[in-house]
Each structure stands twice: as C-alpha cells, then as structure tokens.
Length: 127
Image (cartoon, rainbow, N blue to C red):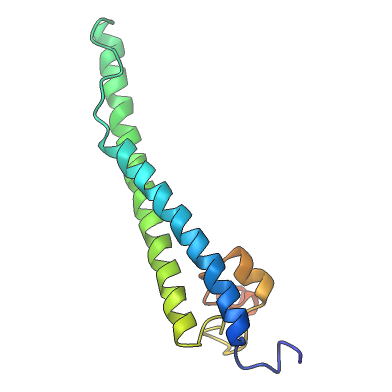
C-alpha cells in the first residue's frame, strides 16, 4: 500500500518511531544536563593572579558564555518538549500525520526529524 493511501502508520511502525524518539529523548536530556551544569558552573578559571584587564575580559566572556548556554538550554528544553509531544501522538495513533495536509509525513523525514508535524509539502507552502 502506498503512503498516500494510508491514513496512519501501523502499530509496528509507531513502535519503531517510539524507540527512535525515546533514544533521542535520552540523549537530549543528557545534553540539557551538560548545558545546565556548564551554565551553573561558577568555577574560577585561575585568573586571580593575572592582570586585571584579562580578568575583566574573562568575566565578560563568562557572561556571554552563560547567555549562550541559556539560549542552548531553552532550545534543548523545547526539543525535549517536542519529542514528548511526539510520544503522545504515537499513543493517540496520530503520529506522522501532517497537521496541514492530513497526509502521512514520509518516514524518511520522521527518522531525521521525529517530532515533525508538517510534511515537506506543508513546510514549503509556509514559505
């Protein structure tokens, strides 16, 4: 049966996507923990005995680094939320159905972007 004729993925296919999403979710949580630990790390980088100019530069750099880490953490939290929502769609058996066209999203796309809710066709219509 061609993808265009199917209205949803089979339970077996959904289970395969669930395994993939859970793997990505675990990795995403690990990465978030690393980002958060880097963000919260107030360790001194040994600048006490160096010139005040370098220390000021280093502190400025640290602030920028914390801001960058904060942005990374926000993005990672959104990614985790999107993956969890994908798991809910799997449980509801609505996973992989484009929210614009109502057609199945190609499995190749879902393997790369497992939290996708738009088909390439719908994504291109947004441009």
